[in-house]
Image (cartoon, rainbow, N blue to C red; front, side, top):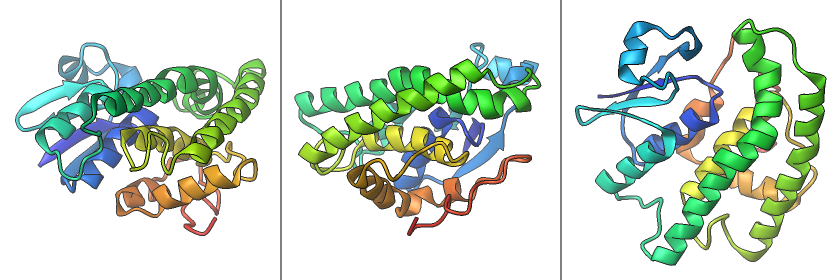
Length: 221
C-alpha cells in the first residue's frame, strides 16, 4: 500500500490526496509534524516539507512532481490533457494556485490562523490576515472569469488544475475564509468537485482545536 506523510490542512498534501483518490490508489495517511524536523522524516525528505509519498517502492516529494508521477504511471482516469498546449495551461494554473494563490492568500489566512497556533509560533499577524482576505476576492473573481469561458478551470474536462484550486479552497473553507456568495459559478464548480468520491476523506478531516464549520462537509452548502 502507498503511504503518504501529510498534514490534513496542507493544500499541497490535499492535491496529492485528491489525485490518489481519483485514481483509486489505496493509501495509508500518516500525519507528520514536519516543523519538528524529526530525523526519520528528514531522511525521507531533506527539505523538511510535506507531502512525501512512498509508492512503487519510491520515496518522492514535492506535490506537483508527485502528481505528475501518479499521472505518468496511472494514466486512467486522466488528470492531464494529451494536447501539449492544453497541458501547458493546466500546469500554468497549478503553478498559479500553488505559487501566487498560496503566497497571497493561503499563507496569509490559513497559516496565520492555524499553523502558527499548531506550531506554537505566536498569534496571527492582523496585517497578513487583512491582506489575505483582500487578495482572495481577486482570485475568486479570476476563477469566475475562467469558468465563464470554460466548463472547468483548465478547459472542457476536469484536470489537475481543478484539484490544485480545490485543495487550497477546501483548506480555507475549513476555517470559513471563502465567501461562496461572491460568485455563483465558482460555488457551482466547487460543489461539483466537493461531491466527487475523491473528496470524501478530505471532508472527514478533523484538526484538534479547530472544528470545521457546519457547511464544510455539506454537499448542498
